[in-house]
Amino acid sequence: MDRQHQTTKLTHVARQDDLFTSAEPERLEVPDQVVANQPSMHAALMLSVQASGLVPKQIYEPLGMDKARWSKIQSGQGYFPVDKLVELQTLLANDIPLRWLAMQAQCTLVPLLSKTEAELAKREAEIEELKKENKIIKSLIRPGTA
Picture (cartoon, rainbow, N blue to C red):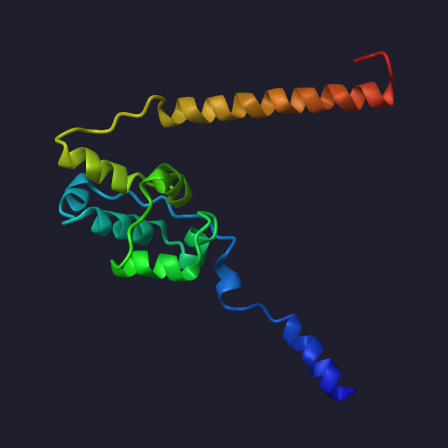
């Protein structure tokens, strides 16, 4: 009986990797000069990861990668899939790899919307969704009033 009790206790203990899976990425601003000084796209990717403050599991799982593949990418023995670059940028909350690429082509990145405009558009979409939900709830409570 005592052994069963100990086993039950152990199943409720969180693994160390799981303790970090809900953290949000940091919004650390990395100066252009630091980005430009990266010798390769791989270095820019790793700087982006470092600047985010996320642990590897918080990166490779949402990207649909396994730990072994991510480990190879980190060590430089594997390549990051280019078609996941924008997804990575969103996940890490920074644009370091894209800025590095632009700098290599003697260009700069210009957002289509300012941060304020993007936030406003997001909030407006949320309001519209809430209005739809409200209308549905009203029609369920008082049929014929929505």
